[in-house]
Image 1 (cartoon, rainbow, N blue to C red):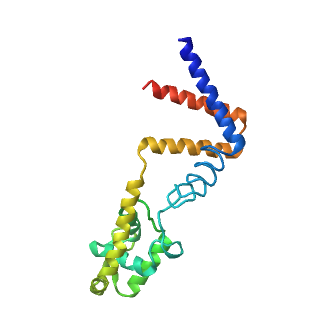
Image 2: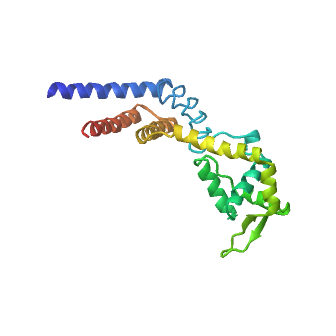
Image 3: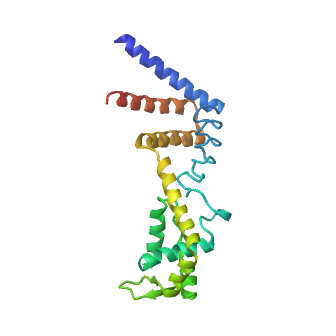
Length: 216
């Protein structure tokens, strides 16, 4: 029993020393140069970090000048969705978000001007609505426009599908997601100001979590 306790104590001390070394040297998983550091793949500027395209604030790949769709592509996509059933702006935003697997959610400032343009072109027409939201339906001219631009419309809609499938493939299982959240929280806290005492406190929390997992 004492040997087991001694082994656990030795492992705990090793973890504390390792974390302290990471803080001091800027290396390891949480250091500036590590995977969760400032410049690592999960760091602030990495692809999976807070500012990366696949991070919490990202929206996946973008088109020219940071746009997911060009103006002409968005015009055709909205027209295609409205051809399925009359829709209002908010409904279109939610439909695009769902089709893209949550990777593309345009703002009202993008959608409503596009709807106004489609209405001015006579491709959609406002319908009577039971609420205050403006609902639009496709017109005969809009149907002809979709038929004439069928290939371009299909390519734009296929992009939504591709992004959704890619996001699904990269969506982390619960354990991986939780592990990432843990490491990201530690990395952020260390960057705010970490010393040896803080490293020991973090190690104690990790030790307790490890023991609880071992008892499952």
